[in-house]
Length: 126
Image 1 (cartoon, one colour):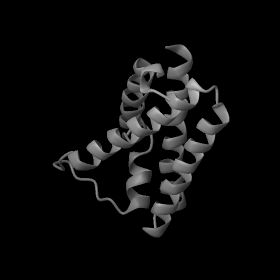
Image 2: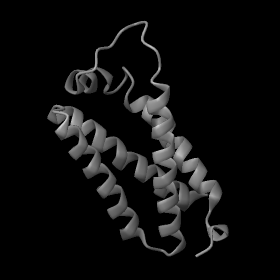
Image 3: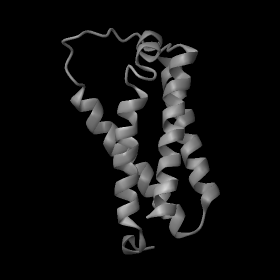
């Protein structure tokens, strides 16, 4: 398979929109306090953005969006769903090894599932 057959606009848009959705998901409007408490993260007014973590996040989201784009090229929706579930499960597993609370694990895994849905929708719409 050649990458030229991919819907690059949908891949990039899916990754970017999923990243921006993460700002809302982990914001005070939704799950920030519960996630921080369950993850052992202390919130401070003067804390800096975790730039390294954010770079890794956008790289991971781009890779997942690329997998979703490849599965869309082959009309393999179930493969996309299983890739999303694998990423969410591995994220939760990693958090469990770090002794995160059930709420924090659910928030992290839920974000991955929602990000994957955003990516699938980008492939369907664009």
